[in-house]
Length: 352
Image (cartoon, rainbow, N blue to C red):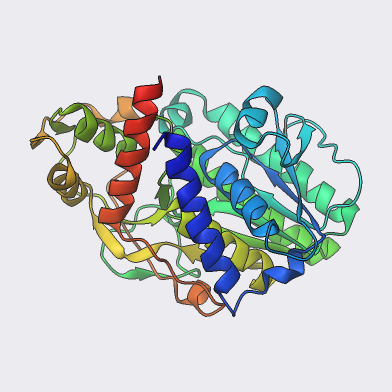
């Protein structure tokens, strides 16, 4: 089984789950045109592939439009199964014809870039979101889902549940906060476009999400742990690994996005996480060392955290009751998430 097959197996599993979820009427998408920005990213590509698979089971196919900068990269992922709109979201976004639904996922995702390119991180978020909101307004879409982040809540210090009304303690003078602060402003833009222009926007605040589709050389901590497991190297933590958060499988993120797209309430935000995965970075490292086929250990070697672009120590225990109330629930726990990720990345490594 190659890496593509591992990815498509996940897509098929979650397509079936979404189709069989009686609380989410995906038939509403039949014959509709759905645009996805950031379509070659981890979550965006999973949304595209899942909608293409779901489309096969509907009376009228979904017309999926991948909004991307790099056509060749997109065609390698999707072939001729989708339409393409080639543009940079920070420029004026041109999508010809009607658009019924939009998922806006184009953004910077590298923690290192948040530190080294904070201005670009902010500009990409604000310009891109403004431009896609204008498209939604002009096209009179049925709904738009903006992909936001758990980081808008800042760095909670206790294990209390964090619901959508929780306050934030973000320090605006920290360049690392270019990412969450720009996401907060984008959420405010979404709410403002809904209030002033009636644009039907919903926000989904995703926790850290991973699964098949992650690039082998991805710099984020979950990918580093998986590479250690594959290559047989000890997991070395440069902090005590005290940060705690929930995680989410890519397929569960896609089903959450589709649920909010179809069942969400305009002008509202929804947390998306698997609450059962709540654990510390150290505990996650220990789990990976156990599921690894190689004998690896977890070591702590304290270093200057600032050069890695890490967020401050936090306890991000997201409450997902609001999302579950509109028909969503996660399927995949943390151990299986890592089994799937390691399987995908192992095959990908063989193909490099």
